Image 1 (cartoon, rainbow, N blue to C red):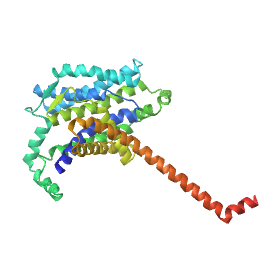
Image 2 (cartoon, rainbow, N blue to C red):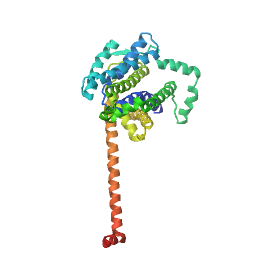
Image 3 (cartoon, rainbow, N blue to C red):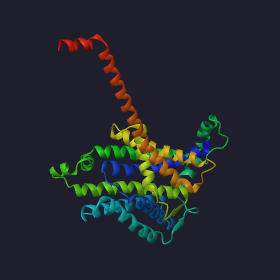
Image 4 (cartoon, rainbow, N blue to C red):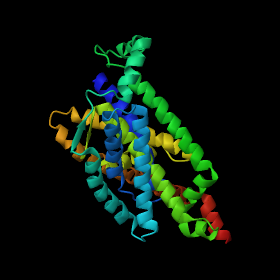
Length: 336
């Protein structure tokens, strides 16, 4: 059980980068970008192709980010220059990327099991330092008898994800970042200040899909393969992470919201892992579990709000009756 949860946290931190990209498009830009399902695979495909052809994993990951950024920019151009509906723009780009990803990989699946990836290099370096012997007693304290292969991936991804979260927070507070946020809130208003909203939308979608492609590249190296169908449903996973995080941790500030998105991605992976341990569920039920989690995350806050509103009305009615039952209410009516 503990090892399963450890693995879900490990993958959840990687998927958190994709959730941050979805947050930028859906919450900041108010753009329903379905390009995510395609750009996630693009990142995985480009990184895998570079690694197989002998390039360093770092260079392969950077190339994946650039490819995802370009895919997002194209979606933005289809919408802004082609005057096509945002939802349809994302769908068109997602469909186009399916064929492009097949072209990049040359076949539906690229294995990386015998290749040197970012995580294999990191694991060798980490084991050379002997840090696993320091962290394993933490799990033994909770009763674990089996330990993860290495802590290197989790520690490294926490550092990378936190760093990207801080960079995202800083960017959204810069002049360009504030303009992108204003474009998502009220495009007509920001345009009245002579801001080029088309360019801001293109840039925002480029950064969003760059983060998604980065997540795809890391997942491919983490799992040891890139598959043309691995991006199906990524937009739902991203939305689930955003919605769960916002419901649990709040959205008072940008820094708190981005932290909530990361937390939501980790919690989502943990919930899915625990759900799949149920005897009546199978691995093929993962999409169904995802849909149920998203529905629950959307419906639960509304139910809680309606219950709070009902309690508030009952309390006000009780206060009114208590006031009228005292002599003050009657006196006030008599003098008036």
